[in-house]
Image (tube, rainbow, N blue to C red; front, side):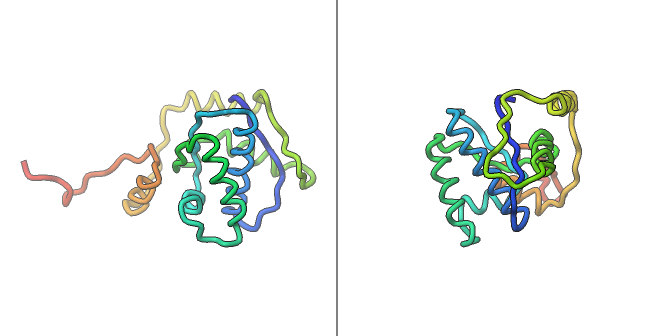
Length: 160
């Protein structure tokens, strides 16, 4: 972990929370000069919002995210499963446990011991299996999820 952050936020729904987290992360990456980088999110909504703003209420934040992405060299934004980044979810829980809403973000320049344990667990875990429908797999593949292993059905098989 190079740098992390946590903050208690007020969000209208999970997409709004994910968008605020993306914005904070992009701002931190820009301020710290952390490029090149890749962005993984477990929210397909975020990827869709960045490509096509479908929620006018989020327009300002989306435009700011697009601006920061451009300033950071247009890094790839792709879907990954929640299991693929347990550290992000640990930091999310850490922020949600803060007592008060704050306009300042807690910046972590080193990994706290609980985060180190999560990183070690991530490194030591060989793989995680998750069953998803083929239609969801197709959608996730379009969103750049690198964990998708396409299945071959009888209709996909070619005659020898």
